[in-house]
Image 1 (cartoon, rainbow, N blue to C red):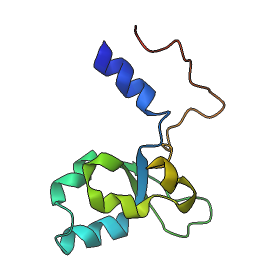
Image 2 (image 1 turned 90 degrees about the vertical axis):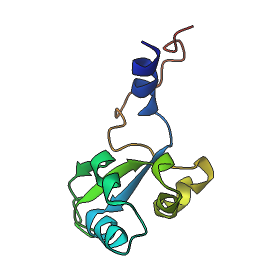
Image 3 (image 1 turned 120 degrees about the horizontal axis):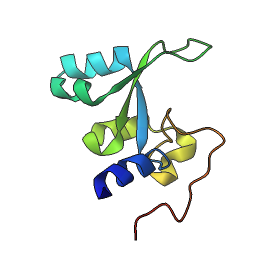
Image 4 (image 1 turned 135 degrees about the vertical axis):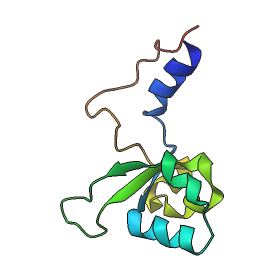
Length: 98
């Protein structure tokens, strides 16, 4: 129960980073990232402007290298919100089991 609830609440935290899929492939090819990291990335289509194409979303704790992909405005938080952040939803402060 604890782990399930923690993972559900993780969507509300600034602990995510989006990396263009092509860039993650380059980092793996250059041996900066381990190839196994791709299994942890969630595939997401590019934005409507299509400036970067498709991207992978990772938890920032997977690799220190991923920190350089955190958006400038969210650097102070240590990560971005997940693409799966429930839009229009707020964190229920009573949601944590206690």
